[in-house]
Length: 549
Image (cartoon, rainbow, N blue to C red; front, side):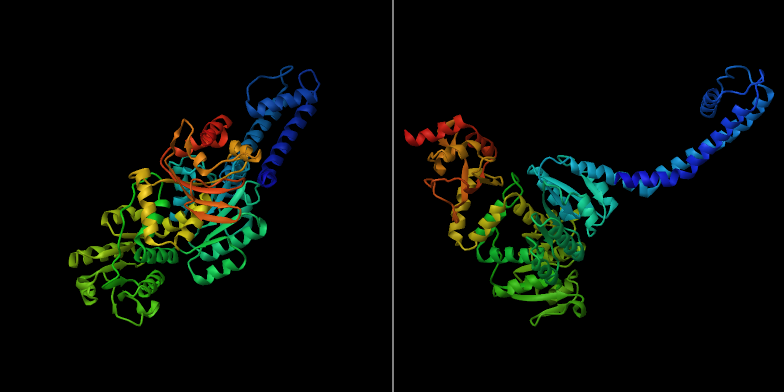
């Protein structure tokens, strides 16, 4: 990179520098040849000294003796010649500094230094649209680090203007180019993963391929907007592929089959310390009206149909999207006539699922005028319309960017939570409701803090050496308050992975072993208290001695 900058400067400044050298040499040559008032010309040293200060400042007098008329005549010529060549050189420098290629080279050089100074694991986020913005903010708020790359200058500018908790290196460039991925730190020893979140599935596909080829050990997460791209990404081992529509459809099916599990997932994956959401109960009896039969509409239609729900579809362009076999109406759904034709007055639910936010808002407001009792699912396409969709107060809000960001954040920050969610789907709603009650007692009205922990030397120094020496320790010991061991910490162990076994809600009497992994949810500040037991030998002895009393 530095060699390219020097080469670019030398190439553009070659003619001005040669002009300066030639004019200075001619001026110096005249002074060392023309005789002075004593009949001798200036020495080379005196001539060089005079030309140097004459060309740059002009006006220090004549040295070492007054000049002869011939010398003064030559100096007049030299003054004008050097001034002209200096102006030419300065103009060339100004033009060079305004060159976009050179500016981009300096920016990339500065970006490379910033990436090279990373001292903690970081993730490369390709695409700083709505999803990338949400993901980067959530990663930083959890103490993780990110490097951003986007092809749009305005998105890089918006990153600079946002009040993020720490500085985030950002590169303006095409993520599909492997050279840009390498500049962003793909081969950096602390690069932990790549998230391909651009709106172009082909670009995301190429990012996944490049990442797996150039750094096979890192984790690669991609957004896919079609099943064909998804299958292609899966074919070469992309670690996680997130389809926001399929993910939402799965959440909707969970909400209809098991509201308790849906609420539990919503609480555990929500923004930490934000208010807890209330439970929802989507109606399973009665007819739904679905507006928009694009890709999102088709996925929701299949899920609702699998639940045995009667559906009427409203679609404005059936020649492009096609229509289902069942009941359907041609139109936008934004006008009362179309909604009435679809029977909105007797419907129990409405899905405003077009790819236009204004139309979705209009559909909801018109439908509510005709039937205020509707259960409403709203699709929000643009993050900038968040306040409008919050105001419309839909029962379920589908935000693709938020779904992708939450999923990636969970996979990167708390991978055990993803496993917990998968295993919890096999539990009944009663199990979920009991756990919800325990969480409610723990955190009152705030989303709990969820994190996972490995009992190794780095994350649990004191516990590691205690177990390594053959000491015994149970989960109950670990969760005692290090300030008062008779008082347990406000923490629930959600999952234990030990020696190949995975246990949901492990018993407190469970014995811990080296290398065990635990998933906790807790009230604010509990993690810091637990750190004392994990890292401090005296605190650990204090809580473990309780078992021996």
